[in-house]
Length: 390
Ligand SMILES: Cc1ncc(COP(=O)(O)O)c(C=O)c1O
Image: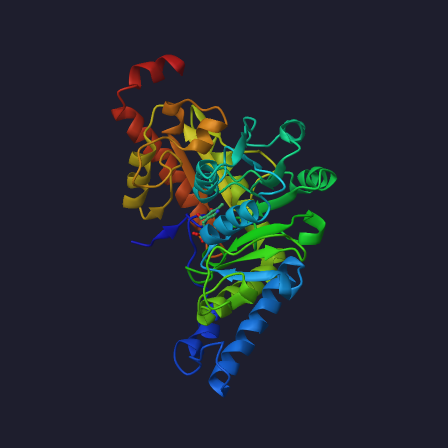
């Protein structure tokens, strides 16, 4: 059976061109970028070229890019690195209730270390209210961390407006752009952020590599101490092969964005239009200010996990927001934050498109989701309630 992959917010396959760019660095070009000999210098050159490529994609200076092991590390680094380096100025941090767990759990850990964290609520579209942000700012606020776009519901936050507020109050602003890099045009100067997290495996690059943009002059300390790599900001022998892959992936995504994203947006809109024809189905996230790849729903009277398994049987890889991770049965903190009841959050479905998806994939998915929801509802213990509502 043909497989249709519609879970690109979770991860993406490595683009063949990215793999080709990486291949020499697995074997022939194996040098340690810190070594002085030819092999080492070859690795160093590849590393610095990659830094330039990635910096160009987001409008940064290469010196402002620190490579990490992924989005999780970049977010930990931004929060903890800024918090400890600025603790004499203040101990208050502002974030939101819908951040990725790596931000939320870093913030919770910082609370245990004596920092104070405000978790801003969001509206029913998952949007942060900038007035509420202004009200949360205190004299001792040192950092605001708000994601660029949400990984579950796709809502894009008003980062430029938030940046103006942060600047007025002289507070550092970090954004988790793991879901937006390569999908919407990013210019760190225009966005006005001081720090921005990226991850390679969401943009057809390899897993286990990412980067943090740190605007020149930002006061931040390292998370990892050691041999002083990455200008003393992130020790550990550089993952040259992964970094080469990430930079190539970012370059391709940036170059092809103009052709790929309009096509994907059309598919997304078709999924949304057609799947909302299912009785008692609802869109999650903002209807317009949303990621081009993201079509997220919740269906009343069904269990998201059962729907995912049914779709998997039909060859479709999708995900549900009803579990923060597939190991947990807790409803998603994001869906609860936008006001869904736990039973509604349990009926969620996230379809995230990628460049290899076709019009046929979209039509097949619409049919498969519609039929699967109907089948599941026939078996549902809520059937009686459902019939009444209809
Ligand atoms: C918004 C967001 N931030 C951070 C991460 C973590 O990135 P990584 O998997 O590279 O650690 C993810 C991945 O799911 C994400 O979607």
